[in-house]
Image (cartoon, rainbow, N blue to C red; front, side, top):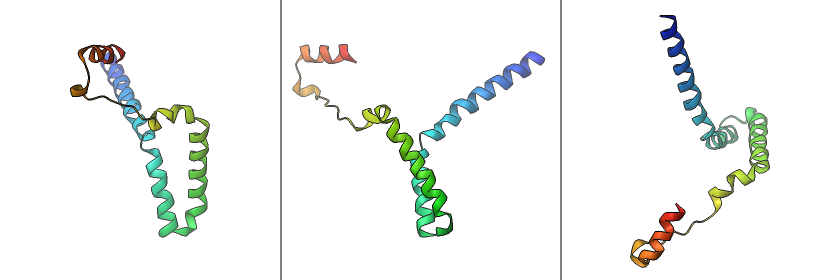
Length: 94
């Protein structure tokens, strides 16, 4: 029974760790909404909201190479305009 409890604890911890990291992917929109809330509805908390937004922008700026792929355009050729040789090259790259 001790082994089953240990396995359940580890699996539950892994699940919370993995799915808890999803919060970092929606962090920027949450910060924007916090700032908007304090700008329009509760100006008393605005200094802290501005501090949080400034820190987030600073970290995004320092890690900008990690965000670069989000802003680069990739050209995808449609299948009707390519030759079989070009299709083979595209599939090899992917």
